[in-house]
Length: 166
Image (cartoon, rainbow, N blue to C red; front, side, top):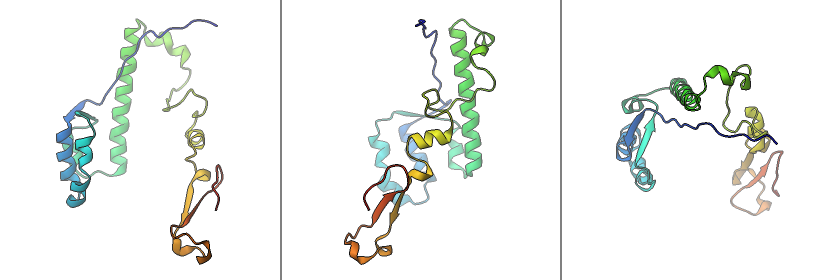
């Protein structure tokens, strides 16, 4: 087997940083149900997180945004961080992009677990982790089942994939 080595390694985090207490205050202002937020907000105190990295200025999170806009901001920040980290890793290795291009033929789109053989596509990853449609658990409410089943909690069965007794 031919030996190989890691020439460089870099990391990237979103550019905006806030302290945990600031995140809690922003969450409280943004959350519509203040009483429920106050009940759940202890997670901010108990998470042992000192600071958080954000992809946009903290004020951006306090304004209403639809899914498409939030997703676009996330994708743009992710791509920028990837390009920055990749560029720094290539430079730290003493290389230039043209020297590694032959190892990345065509368009390169990384998936979170790509390269392990089970996540070459999103559907393959969903199937591997049993979170695709055939693996979804269906829960019947107690009122929808015959009284002869006895249990007051309902029944569940996995459709396809692994199953449980009904």
